[in-house]
Figure (cartoon, rainbow over the protein chains, first blue to last red):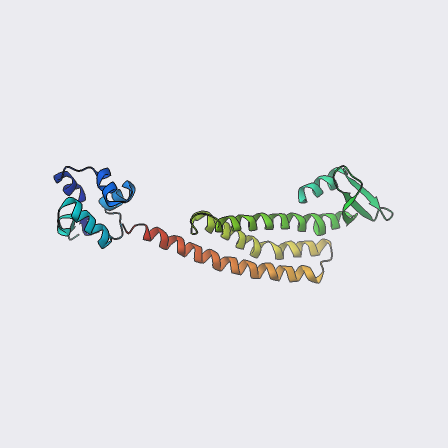
Length: 68
Length: 147
């Protein structure tokens, strides 16, 4: 998929663990892993908003378009 | 009941002939109270007694599994789809060949043909349900990928 999820990069920048983010988002670590690995079919605006709030970033910092 | 009847007929236990041996009682276990009265000849016992009894045992077992599928915490599951598929395949594929086979050895009555039609209708209904469940499962799995 040409949309790449850079959640790992942002987590590293904020020195936060996936488990902690999953807890703060209120989703399971498995679902967060699906999101990080790009297996998700879509991201809800609610989830994106919460991620941006927790990681103090913009949606563009997490999602990137890379032409295949 | 099919298993008990089979054991009784094969072993002769808890059975007693009557009517000059033309008929057979199958008694309640350890009693002399008749439970089932059947003709005492092999084609009747196999094709008009044990075969329908066994197939209805299978039918009710499959029906139980279908009901179980509806009582799961999640409605659309692989288990449910599988049970509905087993149910419709059994209802569509078994009754007519079983009736035709029975008809070769013993005369089948009109109600048996009516039952084949009823099972066919039930099979078609279960087929629709299975297709709906399959689609529901697919949509549910897709929905789970929206985080």
